[in-house]
Length: 293
Image (tube, rainbow, N blue to C red; front, side):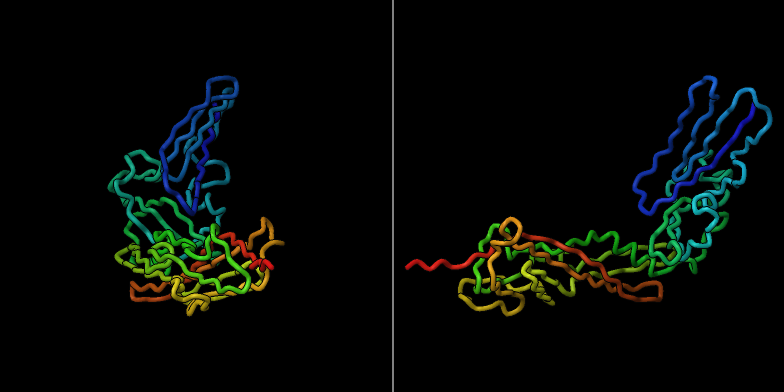
């Protein structure tokens, strides 16, 4: 009987839930076997009846069965700036995540690395004989992890409103509601290897594309309109339409508000700045005053 084993490593940038799983092939002329999965890897064994010899150690031909080697096609050197987080609680004895070792012999970690120069992040489970050194922690990687926890959103547009009606030649006041996720400040931290990085995000500007070909850039949230302002223009963020939206799709201008989030971070003896872009949209109807004679 020939027994062939394969090790399949699964790498993913965003892993939120991993459930160990085992499945087995039905008995029959095609042979039997099964799939045994750990947190991030699976071992497939196929028994082919009527054939002798073969490998039974979980390694397929031409492959070492190492999760990192299989997952990146032999390009493990493309993984850089890695951070490590101890898996707690640790996998049970016999789990593939121990890579053949017993609990207490080294430890299992969640490894987060940059993929070369692409800016992508690879997350996987690895066994290490010794704890990773603190010099393996890149504060910039932790800063991005902190930003990923923030759930930064596009502007919460208060004006103009899709239900409102606006008039040619009459100033439109634009402003947004402010919250931690739509305007800031928003603060989050990430830690690994004894290093903690804290990031603070805040919207630095909002670019309004008004749908008529005009763009207005505002460096603040805008000023809410007050009836006492009459026909005055907004002192901080506004626009005056010169044509109606009658010829626009649906009879409304498609207005897009794009916020630029500026994130300052520091920790691990380093500091820096990141930028995130988010957008919100609203449909605005603009008419004109009809003079009756």
